[in-house]
Amino acid sequence: MSECPRCKKKSINLGHVNLPIGKTRSKRVNVNECVDCKLVFYEESKE
Ligand SMILES: [Zn+2]
Image (cartoon, rainbow, N blue to C red; front, side, top):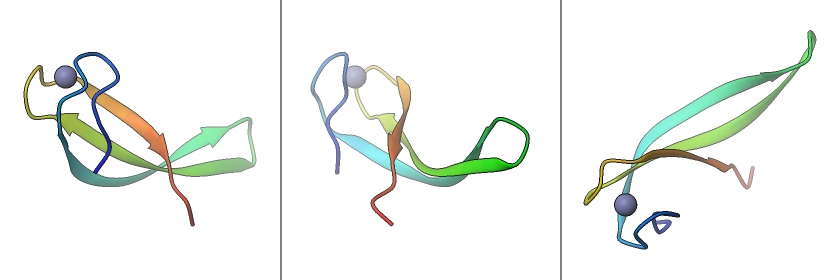
């Protein structure tokens, strides 16, 4: 799991979303939530 960019604690994965880039393209990213400060952040999917 990724660490939180704000407090560097553990995060949990909430699943994937496709972020639109322009009109036709989209990027698949992981959505993570920090267990400590509840920050929600995106992380680029490796796939
Ligand atoms: Zn945090």
